[in-house]
Length: 445
Image (cartoon, rainbow, N blue to C red):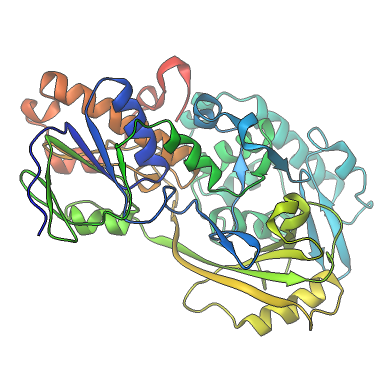
């Protein structure tokens, strides 16, 4: 049985996803002795890439948004060898595929639009004006208004119900993993703003390259892989193998349900589920690196991912990624392949399923009104960070990790708010004011 470690660690961080890695880096930089305990065999949490049968498979369809403030601040994007998607998407309708893009952002894609193929001229003008406005609107201004569901935000911007339902809803169902546009309007507007300002791309070697880059910046010995935590104790944690580690402070940086298993008082939002199917094909059914969105929503979206990153597939084969809005109740692969035959207008009988990922905890639900940031303090010496404590995005996870590091530094340095009589309930349920949502240097969470 493993022996109990001495109290030579200031902070134990459970989980090496984006939140845990950012928290660890900030605390190490501040001079604290930190250990990160990761249950898996590599860092990344949900952002992992598997090598399988000659293919590179992200664990579920993912994209990398360079427009997020935390990404701009912390990630060396040049080192990732990013491969961009064609801006916009192709909306597959019964009458054919229609390109959808902001004309200010992707004029070449927008120029392919046939007159009348996407709603009225008024809808298109309202959509373009909406995109231009939010590309220029500071995040602080967005957050000042009432937080309405995304559907109401779009309607108030002058778009018709038909345009919203038939064009925008199918696309954003794939972004937020819900098909009613019930997501927080604040979150929706901030994500759309980041898409206008940044590029949507993938690292050439897979999405797992992003957390791997952060992990490499940690000093040797800080990150411990294959070290699942069984429980928290008054002195630190108990590992699954029975060993104990002591520390002044513990930060739980897992997904919401796993965090609540260790911190039962932690409120956890509902989680959205998705299933992604990877098919190997003898040739690419589409030549362009662009997302195809199904207007009938039989599938959320599909893309020839090897058109984006050729290294995802062996020479002589193509790789198609397709996602549906379910996990346990996801359709059989054969049914999905039949739907793809109609979407790509090709015979899919000889497509081979490489792997299927059923992800029950892909994103936290973020219905309006949704607080864009919450304190990470749970109890004295106990903190929780992750996208479930902020927003369901890479930006939200990283910002929550940064917030945890700030709050740990403050509390270890001067006793923190618990000595002032602030209750755990108030801290966990607080919806923080806009002023508290700014990163150092003016970056918005």
